[in-house]
Image (cartoon, rainbow, N blue to C red):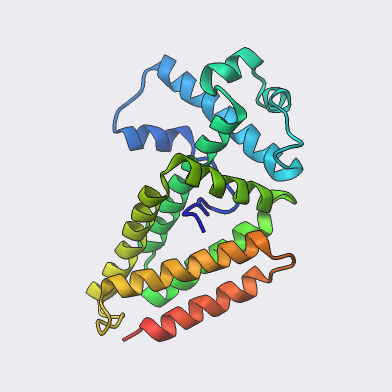
Length: 222
């Protein structure tokens, strides 16, 4: 399974322009900000239509109409629909990393943080459109094509590793197995949930997410 799920917030969510500015660490001028806003609007339109109709049923013209831009404008930002999908995948990975960071900042125990993260996964799936599983699967393929799956795995490992490091420092996670082992347990559960939800009809994601969180925290607590 690619590291999307990237990609996911699995309801793929495009971070707002303000997040892009913060990530760049600069205050953008009006023209640059306008470009970011148009680009984000195209991404948001693509996500909404791919999620609702499916990728093959969505044309570039459909996306342009929803984003209220001309086709020429679309191609100024994205040479093809494939390039748009690639950027959606990147944006959703960025949002997932922000979600993990937000969980880390909760005034709660590590057990509660892990449960909150897996509950959010289930919430996102409940909010997803009827064709979202197709979108997620296609994004996985794109990540493999681009050769970035190793970089994505590294970023996710660091994000989940930060959550584990916090728990070890707080003293509410076991140190019997090492931080890497605990991190990989969380990542493994996450990947399995996403893979099964994307590929198995009527997969009870919320039920399995609750069980996964309980198993992880029961196994990892001191």
